[in-house]
Length: 444
Image 1 (spheres, rainbow, N blue to C red):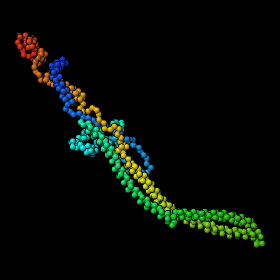
Image 2 (tube, rainbow, N blue to C red):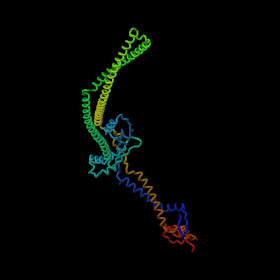
Image 3 (cartoon, rainbow, N blue to C red):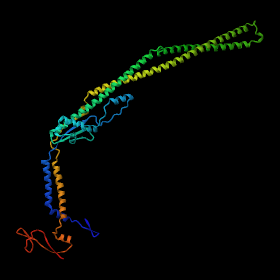
Image 4 (tube, helix red, strand yellow):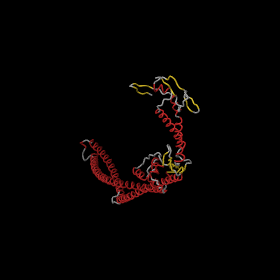
């Protein structure tokens, strides 16, 4: 250590022997204070502080913190309905907070009639410790109380009310889901009836899809028949043209001088050419008539096809709505049935299982007598040592040769020894000193 003197620092070394001497001189103070602390702690722990007992309940969360399964729904409506009818996913932390819910604690006070004993929700909450064991689905519920039977009763009642609250909340949630689904199925049923009536009306129209289909087939057959006739007429026309060309060629081969009415060959060829022209004209007229008829039939077929397409689209649209509504109705009915089945199950007992009922520990958890005594001994020893050094610091008496040299800065020339005679301390002159201090003589 160091101190300042006239602006200069003077360093002083602390000798271990001096520390040991101080502890030796003040040992009785240290012993007395340490024993006093131990005695005080023993009296408090064994006689004054009431023993606190602990009742422990262990719960197993069946569904808590389970990995969520991502399902790919084939339909957004099905996904929405499943979400509505599905219970909210509860984690272990949620269950832990629910156990400490003031409403639940108030229910325990009411059921056990603890209000007359001065218990409140706050005081009961301080007795309660709820923890989730790491890397498990276990929840520990600990209740501390000076009355061991009451600690067990509080733990059992709290667990019972907790399971009842889970079932009650689940029932309420499922009841709301069922009511919502029932309202939705009424709306869907009404829409389904309207669409079915509309579909029947479309099917009962005079020019129905079936009628138009038959008409389209009939016109198509007629069109194909006329096309065949037209192709046959076209072949015949081409044959007549070829025959006419051949006759005209042969006719040109006859010399002009022989082209007289007396020439039977010329007359015959002339008559054949005339007949071919007549036949070509007739065949051309027939082909034109067939072509016109084919155009008429094609026009009718196009109009019929357009009408048929519109009616099919309209009918298919209504049919698709009917199918969607039927699917929705079936899905809602299925979800209502599932929800009602789930509602009939006591989920408080299926999602939470009691692994270990409220069980009392044999020994009190408070006060920890061994720990209290150990702490009292350590603290008493520390405080007594500090107190001993404080007394030593405040003590300004000079007792030893070293004190003279240290505090007065004077050399010691001699020492008057002390001795005991008849139990009294005397110096070398035989006078009773009345005290055990060592006398010193210093040079001035």
